[in-house]
Amino acid sequence: MPYLFKRYYSFRNIGFFVGEGGVIFLVLIGVNLLFKGPVIFLLELPECIGQALLVVFTFQLCLYFFDLYELRENIPLPVTATRITKAFGVGCIVLAGFYYVLPTVVIPTKIFWTSYFIIYLLVLIWRAAYFSLLQRRIFTQALAILGTGKLAEDITREIEERYDTPYRIVAYIGSEKPLYNPGGRPVIHQLGDLESIMVSSKIDRIVVALDDRRGETPTQKLLSYKLQGVNIEQGVNFYEKLAAKILVEKVDPSWIFFSEGFTISKIHRFGKRSSDILLSLFLLVLTLPVMIISAAIIKIESKGPVFYRQERVGKGRVTFKVLKFRSMVEDAEKNGAVWATANDSRVTRYGEFMRKTRIDELPQLINVLKGEMSLVGPRPERPVFVEKLKELIPYYDIRHDIRPGVTGWAQVCYRYGASEEDALRKLEYDLYYMKHMSIPLDLLVIFKTVKTVLFDRGGQ
Image 1 (cartoon, rainbow, N blue to C red):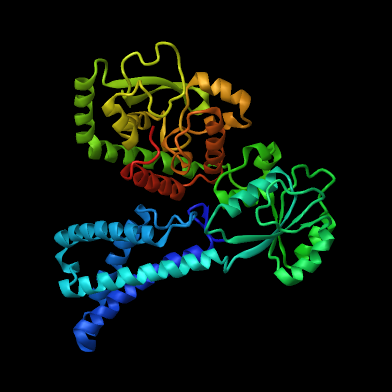
Image 2: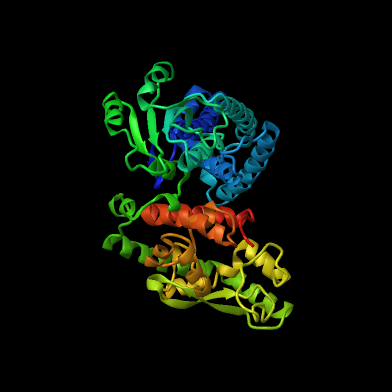
């Protein structure tokens, strides 16, 4: 699978995205040719291409924001049609803004609306055809899993619970019954017995997912298969690529030491810090009106200070005071620190709104400017929770080797965490971020954060 922005994507999904953009582009070009005729069309070809590319970019961006490129779940066609209508409606509003600022890119009304209805119909057909392809598991890689324990179960669930999975499991290899085998796939006791299945299923990959590899890994036979062109992949690495997170409970220190990643160059440090300062200043100016209005509402709604300062653990295990808009009633934690919960009675009405829209986090931009935080990184936790989580969760303290973030990979990939189990699940994403940390990945996180904020997801 290709590796883009530190994420793995299947060729099939990339082809779907590019193909959909191609459909929109070709419709606009075709309708221009139909209405203008060959001579005028050729004279205005560069202009038509520019206009079409703007529409493609705008429409596909809106499709993304309406979760129409989130293909992990099977979305019914009527729901898809409704979302496309909303996405294209917003797209038309965005295009109207572009057309107001840049009149030279305006598409004639008749051409635009004719193209619009054709695009809508063809995109719906395109998606119906692609969903059918996904349902039939066409263009998937066949793989066998060496192992039947917990790691094999985690990999199986990640594959089976994704509607757009690029893999299909054809067999397990092990002496015991798999913990999770929803398709009732055959279980082979010896790796050498895989030959018969390989002929019929054309297995592309063997994933080594043994819970205890000591003395169990059939090294010689795996090497033989590798020389025959079969990809051999370690289970933890395979899961990381598939799920964009690291199975904390399955990795040992040597895996961290010898795996690629977990390195930060001086150039990256400089680039990340420079971008933190520039983007924070820009966001402070951009959101200043919102912050002023929020401060006034907080003061009117309930007594107490506008800002809430709370001790958190930062880089190097040094504590600092994180700055937030107060979203709870005064003295909400007079009896001690507790995890936040859904429908928390301590949260004010406007505080609830701020949490859902992340407005309460905006003052942390000041923490970023002071060097206590970064825009993107693991979320800082309170000392009382850190000490407890360090004892319960392996490698939890590693996250304090970099600056904590206002947002992070765990925040855009996982729901709001309010328990020890959630802390473990979020650490899996935090370690993935730390392993693959880069400016492009930071930009992807920021982009996903904007989507989360605009569509009121993940706050509590």
